[in-house]
Image 1: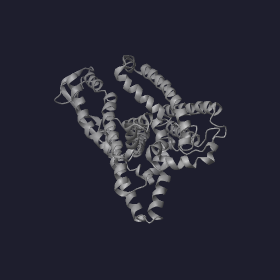
Image 2: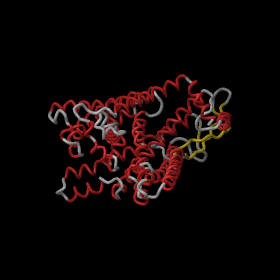
Image 3: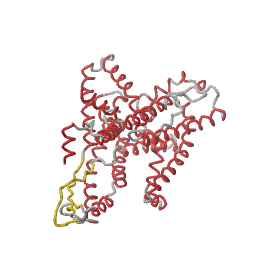
Image 4: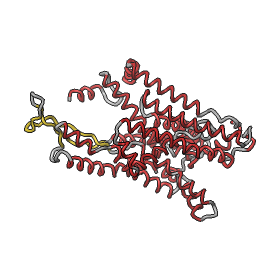
Length: 452
């Protein structure tokens, strides 16, 4: 505890880090306030039925979790940041087949800015379709007609669509500003804050179910909490695990050249077991709304439509979790391939006089690194998929409340752990650069690392 207080004091001493943290917290507070602001023309008192339908799990519960309760509040942020995530998925998938996007990906910073601009415009296009669908679905979700003070005419629909689109664009802007001016990945932090906001209510529902309804008692709550902490530890190991590839560098001569006959100290290339982070989970979750939507379009008269709605509307169902796991594995390989440039790593090694022992520099090194990444990505993707479907397992085996079961792995837990570690690592880097003890290493380990 004493060391934690010292670390917090050191954070406060670094002016740039302190300002970044305060900016991040300020933007997150703005986002949470916006999630409570109800759309003009809707009576918030009559939204209880919508709240009850989104608090019991299911696809609506997941969507409400990602928006931090804004979906159930009919808030100006009701669409959340998911349209931007969907647009990012589409742009990245198109980058494989569209030559123009492939060219932009190779143009460095200018190309990245252009791709971001395309993603923003696509986000607006997705919002224009999702906003009216959300407003029209409120009646089917239990919101009575009397809740619409101005009715459902154009006088209500047009301004509400504009507000919902603007809310998503504003949330996207907040996320980008957090990334640029704050600490951590802004988009991921917005999702994490929304998830954490639902955690106390989910735990309270589980506590009431176990204690007041004589469904196991306090001892079951204690056991569930211990298991939850253990699963958190496993997820941390998953996110932090690396495979170290040994690298040696030729010693440089006094004139600055490279003496290939003299070998320098051995170093390592850390290849992460889960190099793609939480993005496969987010991508897969965004696409899991497609099957049930297709079933709705086909209608209940169609046998296929009925099966799609029944099978993929239940997030704890068998077919839902099978497809979810497959998508996670696929996206893990896809995202790892586009974020880990093995060819560039091999070229950088060759230019700096480094080499992997027993492997020729250049193309063979790139092939070697690519093969190692494929080998470690396979178990990493399986582990990621297993953790993602764990909520369905504990729900059926132990009879937990749906909202609480979602935190036993799945999207929510992996996103929280991944984002927390990423943010702590960035804070840690600031502390170590200023010669302070970091959050994730003891002082002795830091000094030993620096000495090496």
